[in-house]
Image 1 (cartoon, rainbow, N blue to C red):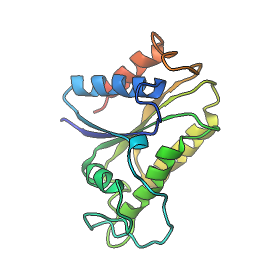
Image 2: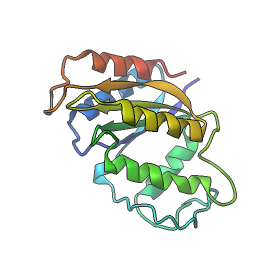
Image 3: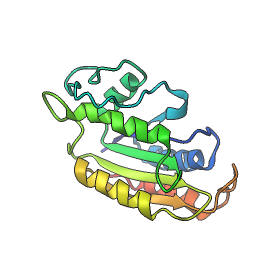
Length: 183
């Protein structure tokens, strides 16, 4: 059965190494009939969470703030799979993706929890100059545990400091296969 996949791309570079992984994952997923919607977060106007607890998950726009998260909420609501894609910044995900993930909390507030559970699954795609992914994978695993999302796997591509360094590396095929394996 075809799945609706949302990719939150937290890279600041449209043609960077993380985006290469995103393209490969997307090609794999689409090759087996899934629908993929990518949000390139760096080009979107997304404000940080205010911690106001004023969100209401069942509203069309669940957060009290009006910004480009209003484009993301409907896609996430309808999704079967959410892919987090980011370069590794100080042993964590980029600020762009962390801000969007924080704002997804509005879907857990108010009169219904539309984020947690719902047979959702997730994958993690990351590229980095180094290889120290342990801390971010620990965070990601805890996030999935909290959200009750099924982990589909991750592709962690170290040794990619400059744009294009990832070209020809096995992580591209791994991202393609991960996208293709979504069931």
